[in-house]
Amino acid sequence: MIDIPRIVIAGTHSGCGKTTVARGIMDALVRRGYKVQPFKVGPDFIDPTHHTAICGRVSRNLDAFMMGVEGVAETFARACRGADIAVIEGVMGMYDGLDGGDLASTVHVMRILSAPALLVADARGMSRSVHALVRGFVEYEPGVKIAGVVFNRLGSPRHRELIDASRTVPALGYIPRTPGLEIESRHLGLQMAHETAPAEGLGELIEEHCDIDLILEIASASPPLSGFAYEENTRGTRSRIGVARDAAFCFYYQDNLDLLVRSGAELVPFSPIGDAFPGVDAVYLGGGYPELYAASLESSSCRIPLAHAADDGMPIYAECGGLLYLCESLTGEESHRMAGILPADACMTKKVQALGYSDGTWTGGPRLAPEGGGRIRGHEFHYSRVDCHSDARFAIRLSRGAGIAEGKDGLYAGEVLATYTHAYFSPAFARSLIDAAALYRRT
Image 1 (cartoon, rainbow, N blue to C red):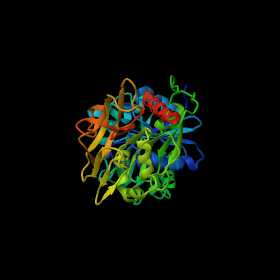
Image 2 (image 1 turned 120 degrees about the vertical axis):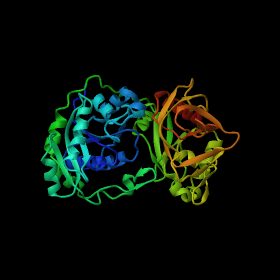
Image 3 (image 1 turned 45 degrees about the horizontal axis):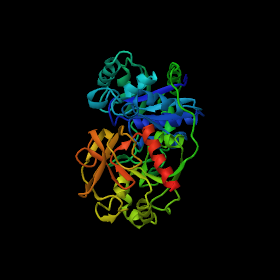
Image 4 (image 1 turned 90 degrees about the vertical axis):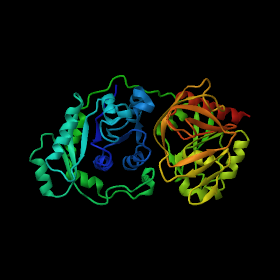
């Protein structure tokens, strides 16, 4: 049984200020001495980095499409060990889920966790009308608990008075329009936490304009959760897997890394930009921004040894940005040589090429692909394309998503495999990757 105070920061729509309010509440609670466990609903890689920087505890994704209901429950239970309170930032509008339904929506996760919500409503340009919006959210789905509202981006004290005159839902905060709080964006979303300065004064702003005591009271009224179990056993280390971690490769689901460790991997972080190639048995290249560092990746001391390792039969698995790095070239404003391991060339594009969930089946591939096939689920988001050579082979057939070419994903050569899908690992895949690494280590 899990008994922890918890609150969901939901929003009326994307851009209403959820991330600002969530970060501010986390900061205010940390300043009060609470051990805050942060979460993010959905497949987002960027918001969790800001949560982690504030809370000092790794923020986890909660995504019912990729993880399933049991996976959401397991991750929540595991991550909350030792925490005083869980703060969960929602995704998009509160009721927005897959294909116009509620699968993988904020409200879906609220139901799984029996968690109340604080609704963030952007009140710019509205006074009494904001209550019609809020009332629609409160009454839309009976049984869902919206405990109160934070009215965001108020223009003046008079604006607050106008809103208060007709309010029927408890107000948990009135946040004035405050320039400089928003995180700058680019083509894949907000900037990462390591690229931005901490938001000075955000926690104090929330303390001043939100009722933190009432938010704590609401969170503490959450009922105990039964049936939330997690595996604690860790297998002995069977292989060393190098994990690319730098400004170019920074998109990873923490659950994937944890699963690799529990399945017998020692993870060795390294920078393909600035480090020598590490002594490892396999490599995992996540997504990120290789296009911003293409010149450095071309000239790095890691590129050629990585290609030699691939020629030697080392298992290498890559996703999205990692896929681009394994191609022969990457062309943006200029063209740069990449690792040259896969028979393809990558090109950056002006428009988004894929955005959304992907769902597919393993159809073959190298040893790191799960034996007997199985399902692979994840998410795609990229402004690039990969032009494959005529001898390209693929290990995944997608029933949902774009993939690399005509619904095919998992381009592979030798023991190297790369996808556009940012996958949420299955236990079968983690075992296959570690088994392939262990075999390489022995031979």
